[in-house]
Figure 1 (cartoon, rainbow, N blue to C red):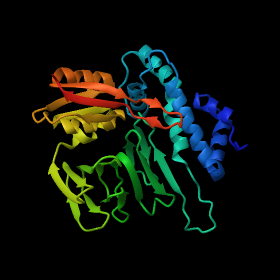
Figure 2: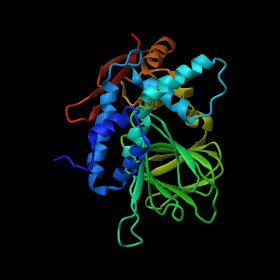
Figure 3: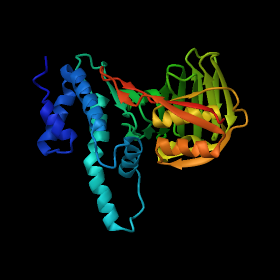
Figure 4: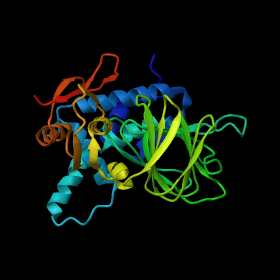
Length: 347
């Protein structure tokens, strides 16, 4: 039975970009109503996928469209030399902006302290919808980026307890506070910093957790506290989930954080890394068939190209072929079935 406090028709209008002052008050009210949290998230997800299925001329392939909208809205752009072009971008963004940000607000599940025990702090969760990269700010002034399908969660007392839980990939720019270290927890490791910039990739379906440090110093510990490692700039640390071992190497950190600027960067990377990062970037499953890829290496930079363009380039530049198997569709139970890409050697 639908909750009377949730006006779905009104939410439909808000999702389409028709937001009034009264609507803002209404949104604050429903965010605070914990009794409709589950229905609210369900409604937001349904709206998200309905919008993705809309037949918008020239914007049918929303993977790269969403990337471009996101970076237009969240990064400082240089002054446009063509005002007409700028107005067109604004009009274009206004048509689709709600796709990115209103679902994000709903998914965040913003909760406020309602318990009688003053130590009972509810958690706040920020999620990046599929195919979108989202810039976020934390209560202590720290900022960051969430990659597609990723989320961070923290308690309501974050100012005095700077701890976040990460699922997926995020870049953190941590505000310095030696008295209150900043902590990022995944299922396998804990990253501790006082003020620094670093990237953490911790996907449940991947065999490793990766941490790359851009500035400052951080300390990595596994969950069992059996080993800790101090990282310096341009260090890459990999935690192997199966062996529970940490190992590191020196890298170009900009390659690993370029995704925050809309760039997919490869620097002499082997086929398994190529497949892994394309899968993350485009929210697809990439499978490598065969073992004749020892000499395959890639050096390239892609800026907001869609998946088809990248695959076409790889086929021309490398001795490989590919086939799109299935996926990229919504199932009847409203779960999303990933598109699957099969990579083989060129015959």
